[in-house]
Amino acid sequence: MTKTAANSSTEYSISQLAKEFDVTTRSIRHYEDLGLLSPARRGQTRIYTQADRTRLRLILRGKRLGLSLEDSREIIDMYEPGKTNVDQLKKLIDAIQLQRNKLNQQLDDISKLLKDLNQAEADCIDALKTNGSQ
Amino acid sequence: MTKTAANSSTEYSISQLAKEFDVTTRSIRHYEDLGLLSPARRGQTRIYTQADRTRLRLILRGKRLGLSLEDSREIIDMYEPGKTNVDQLKKLIDAIQLQRNKLNQQLDDISKLLKDLNQAEADCIDALKTNGSQ
DNA sequence: GCTTACGTTGACGTAAACGTAATTTAATCA
DNA sequence: TGATTAAATTACGTTTACGTCAACGTAAGC
Image 1 (cartoon, helix red, strand yellow):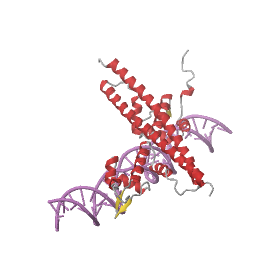
Image 2 (cartoon, rainbow over the protein chains, first blue to last red):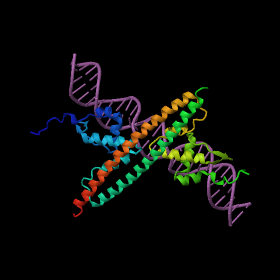
Image 3 (tube, each protein chain N blue to C red):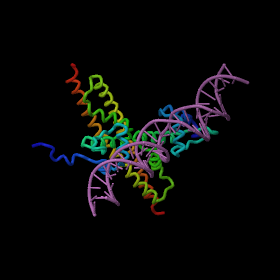
């Protein structure tokens, strides 16, 4: 009964993904060149699965956080500790801790920047009150 | 009485700043080329004040958050609404709101990434338990 | 069979953010 | 005062992350 039914919506073309995530197809192919994606092919046409879509989302999230594509590749690989041995797993846990530290630093940076922005806005509003009648 | 006393520690050379913030002097000069810094000169030697030092800290914070130098320049300029008029102030407030939105997006990204990392680590530890005896 | 739309692979171009000499100037210390 | 050290100024090189053609394949619809 559970044949190959209703997986029509679990496939994506390159332009579908491009549209959905508001990137160019060029970028998506570029990510593939760098080994961040490796979609299946029908003929020579790329077929993207849900998993590929998730990877793309992770890539773009990384970009918003200022990660290089190479950084993102490493992080994404962390999510699939498939056929790794004990040593690799331990190294992976270390890498995860490193990333966590970086992210916590970012959290700190952001909260400081937000505070600064609030202050700057207050100064602006102040200046408007003082200056609005000129 | 309050002549020019004891401001010896409020001046910095380029290499002092470079060392303190762990960047190259080349980078600092580059920021100046782009108009993010404009230190005073003694002869042709650059003299940095506390204010310059603060600006540099802001620049590097921006970098950690993935901002371009151009973005940082705009943000930093927000902190000094000196001789601006009403229209400029209003535009500034809008720009501040924009930045705030971006930062909130980043906060969301980071919390998701942290969750993912936690899960990845849990998977690792699990794999270690299962696999550790091989 | 022609157009239109979407997809493919090169291959070269480019903007940002520095790196890396090479050379010159200025200050200082033995 | 000659050598060393720090700083400055060109100026070309490099890496990352794509943009931008060019040239071609393929399936859909009329």
